[in-house]
Image 1 (cartoon, rainbow, N blue to C red):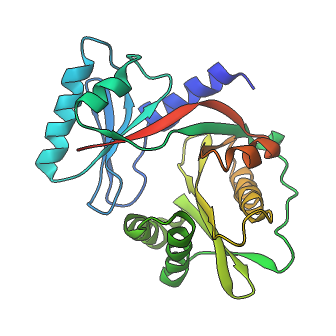
Image 2 (image 1 turned 60 degrees about the vertical axis):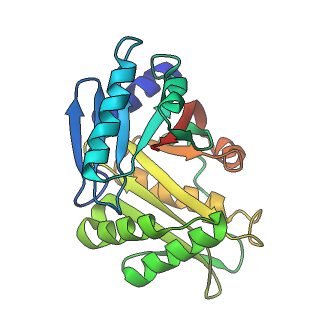
Length: 257
């Protein structure tokens, strides 16, 4: 993989050329910044910036004023190659809080190992309605120990209003939900985004997450996407690397004060 070329393509397709990630959201392009504006239950934030040392502080202050005027908390999604090089420091100085750093990992679907089945006794089922969305949200709360209210609302809206844009699945051990994940598909781009793969404690280490990655990547291939991308934690990165994903850069969410 030509890392620099794929990263540049990712920036063009998924950041500078971003599309709304769900019903009711919109993308706005203002000087130096591309941002998404959504409801209070959607994701609000900066997806791309093209700034320099002279323009960065003013752009940060402008986004803070803008989202404050809407009454929205927001996130500045900073990538390791974004400029200026001290943009993270500037965000912290403006009061933002950095969430844990993750690694942007990308794989060409044709190069992936996809002949992966879930372990014995586990089956993968699609999510198509409110009951399935509730299972996904419940699994995520157990797996990550975080509130899933925003994700629950957003996924339900996607499943209900734009089902072709999302693939959500739950892994069941018998009738017990033990893992869940989703994939977001943006028409006209070459990247399918894998999100939210989480497995409850006690079921980890059995290959369930690996099977969910392979399952979604197969769907992406069938729908004509060339690449799949993941914001990987330190726990998922080794699994993804064994499947054929490669790291391109880091990504850190900076949350508004």
